[in-house]
Image (tube, rainbow, N blue to C red; front, side, top):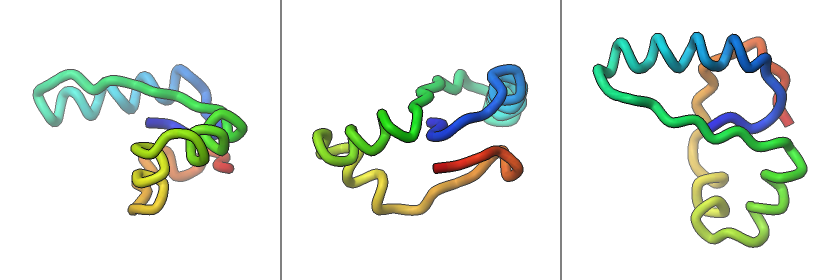
Length: 64
């Protein structure tokens, strides 16, 4: 899951590396900061996820 802005090519390259290491597909969900804020309010699963740890796989990417 990616929240914020990141170049799609970098995201896809990083996911490809993760798939290679894990030996299984990695599915992508990308949200703008506005979409994420709305989901945090209206989706109980996202609300729960947003209170736990966040793992940054592109540490230099802009975040909300």
